[in-house]
Image (cartoon, rainbow, N blue to C red):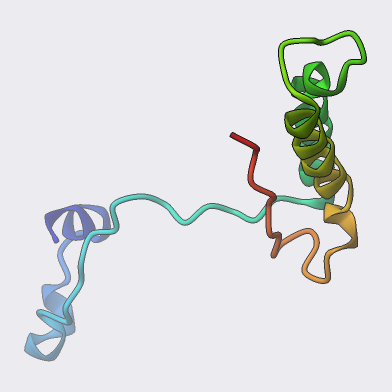
Length: 96
């Protein structure tokens, strides 16, 4: 509570009725929702970062793993089609 009082200053002029209204400190700021451009840039970067998983010459993963990565990448591309885009997005889970 001291942080709020420090920011607002002396509130004694409000009287006893406002002395303690249950103010509390918030641990972190509430994040601002991403814009459509920011979401699209994030998707593009995630596609770049996962391109290795679908490279035809990559023999370090199995066909099943490659299929999982392909499905993940398709889910990323489908994000703009979600009803809540761009503010209420269900992000796909990266394969293990």
